[in-house]
Image (cartoon, rainbow, N blue to C red; front, top):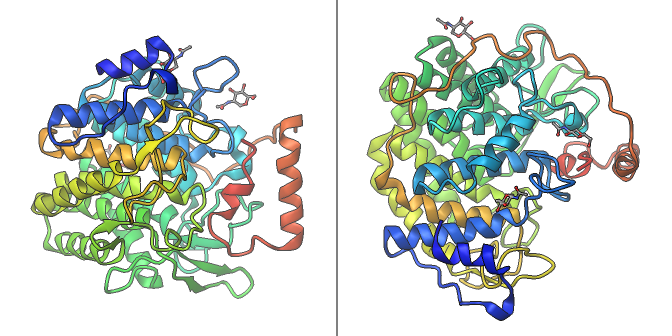
Length: 465
Ligand SMILES: *[C@@H]1O[C@H](CO)[C@@H](O)[C@H](O)[C@H]1NC(C)=O
Ligand SMILES: *[C@@H]1O[C@H](CO)[C@@H](O)[C@H](O)[C@H]1NC(C)=O
Ligand SMILES: *[C@@H]1O[C@H](CO)[C@@H](O)[C@H](O)[C@H]1NC(C)=O
């Protein structure tokens, strides 16, 4: 832990005792200090280890999936910097949400459970195995098995023989959720990415066959184009039993999740085909998600419509880029440059005050947009994570590639983990006082038909967080 962080913790940091934070990425130790300060501010949002908090959950208005994403960043934060300050809260949060079955499908989240939501926890479980993160007690579910459980449940939900459009995962896990009639690139991208990394980690070819099948399906539907453009998704017409009407909006995290999956497949197969896909996705990424060389979220950033989920996507793109550099080494120089630039751009906007929107130490809150070098005041878990990721992933040259079972990995797998039957509907939870507002909003919106075909709106509304 760096000295100034200890001072914050001990003194009870406040504006009046502020020693100005000067973000600096000019040396490895400066990067570590800066990342430690940003991480400290990030974790001030988290109350899962405090009285009244639930381990693994961010307080409202943050949704379940974002905490899963946050723990992924914290695992790599430790892997890249060696600072274990947040390992214990991460372990406890992950273990609470993995559920005794080991599948990251907690019943509390039924009313908002998308395949992508479960996927972000599955990705984090895979990261823990790849980072050789401390293992949970051996009588509880393990990291690798957690990723396998998510994979197995995805495989059950994949619609092929009796399904629509000859394959694909729907966005939502349960048919009563709006968004069920939409098959999207993030849900299928999580499946693809986890399958590819399981193939790379375990050497089991079944996972690679699935990754290929998922990839082929996205291409067949035209959601991934021959130019490697990744569209958001395609609607299911339940009556006509077809998929049509591609939603063409494009997001950074979709680019990242497919890019890294392709890199994992390359590392597993060492084939020119996957090398070509890696190059295609990387070129698409650099053409689409940068303005004057500055990373941004083109779907919403310049028009100020990014929702709370979307403001966290850039951080995942950076994470996926870093892993790509390790798994597809010829991309290393290009990606190192991208991440160094992102860090330089991000720290310019990390000077925000402690206050109602930012619980961390004064002068350490990061705004969202990096485009004009000025703090836009959009503080939150997402923007703070984006900047944290940009900063610590600059340590890329210092770290080894993600581990595999043969190379350093210790996490125990279970090829049969998770549910192997079509998804049973969990027992609904008794509606408590805190749930009522959410349930009412849900009913009203469904009645009004407002949600049909919208993306990410549902996870905003359906969560009872
Ligand atoms: C909760 O976690 C934070 C780190 O994020 C730590 O500083 C704090 O001491 C923990 N609190 C308790 C009560 O364990
Ligand atoms: C589910 O909600 C209950 C009631 O708030 C809580 O005690 C429990 O820890 C939650 N479980 C998970 C996995 O979040
Ligand atoms: C490979 O993975 C598949 C899919 O989970 C599983 O059925 C099979 O048993 C695994 N094979 C080995 C040798 O572990």
